[in-house]
Image (cartoon, rainbow, N blue to C red):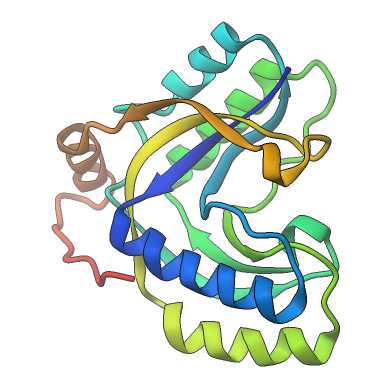
Length: 192
């Protein structure tokens, strides 16, 4: 069975992201999907092992909010149009550790992002959508809500991707951790 570990966002962020995903999906005949940040994906492991991987992230390294650094496009199917995210180095290191923990092969970890469109769009359409998304999302913050173990991979049809288990995030622990990482400064998030 193939699993991925996703970071999910609060309802307000999901509604805004999903609105853009659905609009683009209908406009360009792309698949629809739930917005998320894949912490680690395509795990060919048992469910109990996937749960252990998910727990590597809970209460330790998930910041309450994550900044959108840029809006980009590519020729990669699962990253046709996406928001690049600024995540703390500790979270990136945990992603790397989780990938090494689950794979005996060299694991290629994508840069942290939230995809907005899957598929193969032409450059003109991508440029137009990047411009719109930049106005809507650049420098905003996405609010983290929970982590899911999801039955998904590049070899599982998108329509079959299903959360198997969702684990809440202890925001008090993550906020203390974020303050420690920022030298004790509190920041007020700009909501996406």
